[in-house]
Image 1 (cartoon, rainbow, N blue to C red):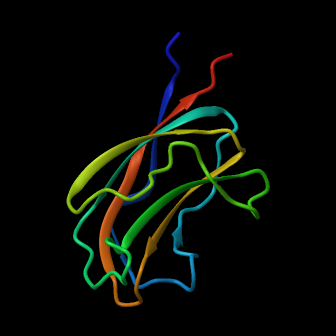
Image 2: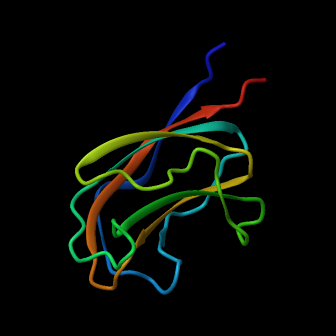
Length: 128
C-alpha cells in the first residue's frame, strides 16, 4: 500500500536569511504536529552565502531537521544532513518522523552572513 502524500513548505521560496542568532539558535520554522505522518521528504536549496565562514568551518550554512515530544527539548531527526547542500544545489532528504513535533533549523555562522534558501516537499501519512 502506498501512503498518501501531503505537500509541505517549511521555508518558502525564495526566503532570505541574514545574520547569525546567538550561539546555536539559528532560524527555526514553526513546529508542526506530525503525529499522522511517518516520513518527511524535503528538498532543500540554497544560494551562495554572502560573508565568511570562521575556521575550521568550510561552510557558513547548516540545516538541521529536529523533532520534539514537548516543543521544549529538540533533538536531531534520523536522516538529518551532516552538512547542508552546496551552493546552488538542490538536495532531497528523507527524514523519519518518530516524535510528535517537527521543525527545520537553519544556522548561519557569522552576524554578517546572508543567504537565500527554501525547504519544501511532502509528508507521508502513516499506514493503518
